[in-house]
Length: 500
Picture (tube, rainbow, N blue to C red):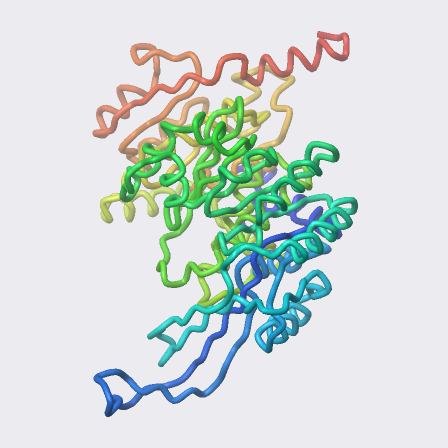
């Protein structure tokens, strides 16, 4: 890299997403849904029970943490939001435990409606040596009585007036009654908010016209009447039903989480976008959906582009998946997570990385460009390029190279800034700056399985095509979206100033 344009590698992710994260502070967020108490009984086991061939667990400690919608509220608070949490619990000891846990984690318990005759939802896990042996579920799952529902609707109306974002966390355990959803729909129609819904059956909330919905894969498949798929086949399966999913849920944005495969994000009138995640054990996925939906809602309320919202939400979920049990991602942790993303490589790094990837049997995808003003055409092309393999490496023209190719007035943004914006995309794994007019040297070092080029190129006129073929790779051409180009954007900007 040229010294005058390089930037500290660990800082690449911070430039785009950290201002969004900073904007979370003070956002007034309303969370409504099922409050659960997640209880963990930690112990050890050294013998079997006499009455049956089952282990005896000597309990050493008990941990009580908010779960369900309460965990969503805790996550929003941990990310910096001012949270109001509305739910219904029983008038019992478990409700007291839950209230104390909420307060300890920065969420006021005054929004809990305590109902006589109702039992607080509890999921109690028995662990020995850190391994879950058994989960015991208890609590009321029937609908609310009319008086209790009326109290909750009254509190919803009062809290709505102050909210910047509203998150609905519906586990299907009776709190989100038809009457309460009618109230949500009326409030959204009269005073629209950023409304994000996470529900077992999102059809029930469609009349509330949510800004975004967050089904997991199983929920989306069930909603669409699809049989369960496996692996990356799930991505293509869900992607084929984008319009139906948005229409069925009534949402502008739908983020379908795919556990270790990341998330597939649809937005009305825009190309699909996919985020990517590091593989992790499903055993550690407890509450990751709550974290994802909290970060997604706050990022949307902060006014971030949808693809940035999705990447930020995926980053937050990645933090909690890396830990055991029900937990939350703090704003400080997320800052560290993004600051630690190391995507910028030098040529020597590229050669070593490519060699290790090829030895591991990974499919390496390479593309290159100036990426002067990153627009949706670029993002769509990069997202599709990533889907062709395991690792996407982007060659980035240095400033002098851009000037030779585009003219003295370019680039608009220096290489350091262009690299930082690219690094904020989860589909981009690595970036290598090059000063030549072509990326031939990088292609020789990377020996890509697939070379992707976007724009108006043909295979017979693409200079890099013979080199890629000689190295055993394949060329894929992906035209940018119509009406999306940096030159066109600059022309429109110039026309707006009257100097084009």
